[in-house]
Amino acid sequence: MFSLKLITSRCASQCQNGVCVTISRTQKSVPNKLILKDFRDHPISAISKKPRKPPFLKNVFLGNFDAEFLYYPEVGETERYQALQGILPSVEGFFSKEVDSNKINTDGSIPEDVISSLKNFGLFGSIIPLNYGGLAHTCTEYARICEEVATSPSIFLTLMVHQSLGANAIFRLGTEDQRVRYLPKLASGEWIASFCAAEHQAGMDYSTMKSFAELSDDGMYWTLDGVKTWVVNATKADVFIVCMPTEGSPECAKLNNKLTTFIVEKSSPGISITTESVGAAKGVTFCNVKFDKVKVPCKNVLGRVGHGFNVCNSITNTDAYLYGSLTVGFLRKLLNETIQHVISSHQYHQDLSSLNSVKKIVATIARKIYAVESMTYLTTSILDKYEDPDVDLESVATKVYAIKVMKEGVQECLDLLGSKGLLESFPYEQMLRDSRVQPLFNLSLDFSDVYIAAVGLQHAGEPFQELVTKLRNPLSYPFAAFKLFQETQRSLRRDPKLTLKLYQYVHPSLKDASTQLERTVLRFKLCVLVALTKDGMNIMDNHLNLKRLSELAVLSYAMTAVISRASRSYCCGTQNHDHEMLLAESFVKDTCEAIDYVIGEILESPTQNTDETSVKIADNIFKFKGYAAEHPVQRNIT
Image (cartoon, rainbow, N blue to C red; front, side, top):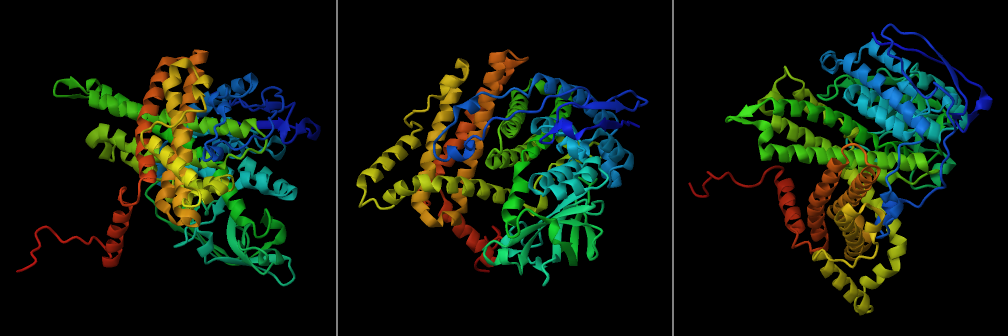
C-alpha cells in the first residue's frame, strides 16, 4: 500500500502571514520509495502579491477590458514550479496504481487505507497555511493537484467539500480562535468538514428556507432547528459549516437579510443523519442532516451575525474554479481512453480515426478542454497574484463553462465509443453518471447564470444610470436614442467601432482572434445597455436575458483565457505551440457563432426571438400539468 509521512518542524518566527520562510523536514521511508516532494523539501521564500486590481469580468459588462489579462501568467516562481513538478508524479502514480475507482463505486465507499494515504499526502490540508498544519499550496498548485485527484470523482468531492467549503471557509472568514481550534485537525484529516446549506424545495434560496436559528435569552448560544439536504459525507464529518436564517438578535433586526453561518460540531446533541441513494460518485454519501434544538455557542458564528448570505456566497463562489480541475482531469482521462478505442476500431474497411466526422468530434472536445484549462489557471493566477482579488465572477464563470463542457464532452466521447459506452463491464457508463456530480447542493446552472448576470449588472448600474435614464426617455433625449439605434444596427452587422486595439497585446498570428474578442466585448456592452433600457428595474425578472448576458460574460472570459494562453505558448515556444494556436483560432471561430446568436436574441424584440411564444407554450403545459398537444392518431369526431 502506498504510504508516506510528512514530519515538519516549525518555528513561529519562521512564518509570515501563514507562509513559512524557512522549513526543515524529516521523512519516513516507505517500501515503494515513492516519496511526496512538497514545498517542505527546501527553504521557500514567502509569496509576494501585487496590490488589488479592479475586477476584470465585472468591468467587461461596462465595455472596459484590462489588456494585462492577455499576458497569460507563468506558473509561479521557479522554485515553486519545480516543487510542484516534484509533487505531481507521486500523486499521479498513487491515483493510477493505488486507487480503484470501479471498486469505490461498487463498494459505495472510499477504502480506509486510501483515506490514510490521502492524509499522509497532506491532501486534506493542501491550501491551509503551514502554521495551521497545512501545506500552503497556492490556488494554482492546488488546482493542478486536483486535476489528478479528479480521476476519482468520489475522492475529489470528499477533498473539495472538506477543504474549499469547510477548512478554507474557516481560514478566510473565521476568527483566530476558530482557526486555532479547527484548522490543525482539519489539515491533518483527523477531522472531516462538510457544508450544510441547501434544503428541500428551497434549494439554495435562502429567502424560502424553513430552518432557523434563534438566539437564547441570555445571548450566549443559538438554537438550530431544521433539515439540510445534499450534505456530502455527513456520516464521516466531524464539523459542519451551516447556513441558517436567524432570529432574536439586535443585528438581525436591523437587516433584511437575516442569514447567519455557524461552525457546528457533529458531537453536539440533537443532530441526526439519514442518507440518500445517488447514482453518481457512489464513494461519497449524500445526506440529510436534521438539527433538533442543537445549541451552538456564539463563538462558533462564522463571520458576522446576519451576514450569512455574503459568507455563503464567498464560500461557494471563491473556489468554484475547482470545477474546472474536475472537468479537465476527468474529461482528459475519458478522451484519452476514447482515442485508444477510435485508433483500434474499424468500420466498412476504414479506420475510425480516418473519418473526418470523427476527427471533428475529437477536435471539438479538445478545444473545450483547452478552454476550461485556460480559464481555470487564469482564475487561479488572479487569486495568487493579487491581494484580496475580486474574482467571484471569474471563478463562477469557470464553473459554469466547465459543467457545460463536462456534460457535452462525456456525451460526445460516449457517441464515439458506441455500444461499448453502455456496457457495465466497462467504466464508461459509470463515468457518464459521475459527470453529473457537479451541480452539488441542489444548485442548478440557472442559479449560477443569474448570479453572474446580476452581479455584473449591479456593477454596471451606477456608471450606466444616467445614460439608461436618457435611453428610456427617447422623446426627451432623441440624440441618445438615435445613437443607441445606430450602434445596435452596427452590432447586428457584427461591425462595432473598434477602439480597444487588443491585437497589440497578443502575438500577430492571433490578430484575427483578438479582433473577434474585441468585437464581442464592445457588443456585450451594448447588450447590457439594451437590456437595462428595455427592462429597467424589472430586469431581474427577465431570466432569459439574464442567462444570455451570463453566457456572453462566460464566453468572453473563455475567449480571453484561450487567446492569452495560446499567445504566451507561441511567444515562448512551448512544446506543441502550433497545435495550441490551432486550438485557439478554431475555438474563437466556433465561439463567435454562438455569441452572434445570443447577441441577436438580446437585441431583437421578444416576438422576433420567440421568447413570448416560448412563455405561452410553457404556460399551457403547466396549465394542463403535462404535455398538452393531442396525440396525432386522436380524432376530433368519432
